[in-house]
Image: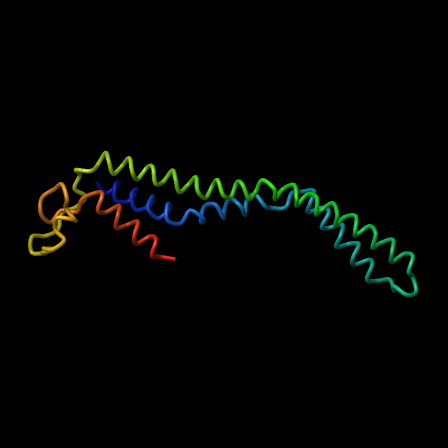
Length: 160
């Protein structure tokens, strides 16, 4: 029954905080490609070269370098736009998809293990007004699976 405690707790926390996984996916998906890194490196070299020239004294050379920098900026912007358009959709699908999958798994586990006792409290512990709620289909001082899942969900949503 220990595996039920671990699995239900993990699924509860994942369903309450799906953005932890979707943020990692978004970070991985938005990494710069090899071409973007090369363009950024070329841009930094051109900017360093441009700083060595005076805008007033060597205007032609300065403006030629500026046009090359602007062309690289346009390429970087196009690549970023191409990459970001499906990223928002992937982020939303991963976030709500994870939440739905975890919720469905918890629902199935709750239905399958509805009469399962996860652990039994000592007889000297008396939870008298709430004893029936905590141990619903089982005997006194037992913690049922669905109560555990419900409690884990509440605690996971309270933790920020």
